[in-house]
Amino acid sequence: MKKYRGIVFFDLDNTLLNEQHGVDDDVLAAIETLKHNQVLPVIATGRSAGVAAGVLQTTHINSIVALNGQYVALNGQQVYSKSVPMPLLKRFMAYSDDHDIALSLYDAYDEWATAMKEGYSFLNMSVPTVDRQRYETSPVYMMLALTKNKADDAVLKAKFPEFDFYRNIEFALDVVLKGVSKQTGISQALKAIGQTDVPTFGFGDGPNDVSLMHAVDHGVAMGNGIPETKAAAEFVSTDFREHGVVNGLKHFDLI
Image 1: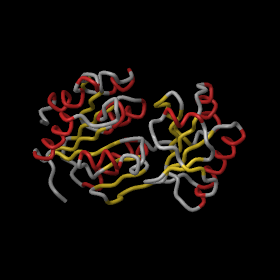
Image 2: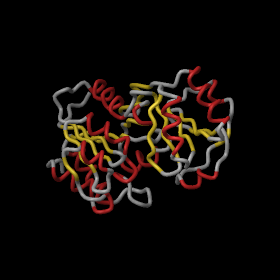
Image 3: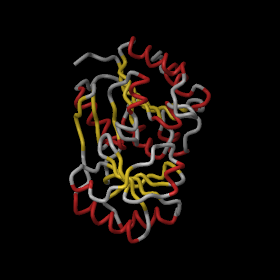
Image 4: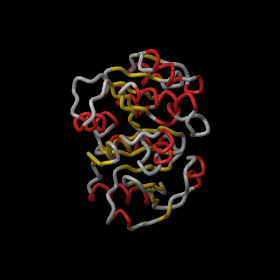
């Protein structure tokens, strides 16, 4: 595999992406400069590889830690995945049905739902197909529990200690296997790359980026990041709307 001088992991929402969920020209230029400098850019996101496909194409990045670390692909090839065990999945789905919580279920590239809920319109994503049986034949790496009720956070954590829950948006909870995080996925990515002496960097803003900060040598929080992510970072850059990624890369002389 190619020898790198550094590896940089980028969160997407409110970090690499702008408010229109696109990529600004200065960020695209920075990514090209990274590649020229033999620094490997990798996406590290709670989204699936399928949802992130447009960003991967736009940025010409072909490595990703997806679904909060439960799926990893390098140079377009899967190197790690961890799906939810079937008994646990069935128990969680039954509880969600009983309490009128719709679920989105994700494999590496696709998403489907247990029911249709108003909340989908707030996620800036295509409305998924409703399919009650697909989980029986497709691996489920992550789920999204559509609930605006903040009281559900503590209840779900208590009833399902096998999962970690992240409320990254007001209308839903990310649901991933306990102990599996962006840190897990990044560790698997670095293991596959096999270059332990290469400095690593991570850029993020949200609750699921605290583990990203712990996974790398040098963590960069966006100025808009939550206090926990800023506290875990080595450097706090400017807001993502104010060239946060570019300024963070410049701080570490990566571009």
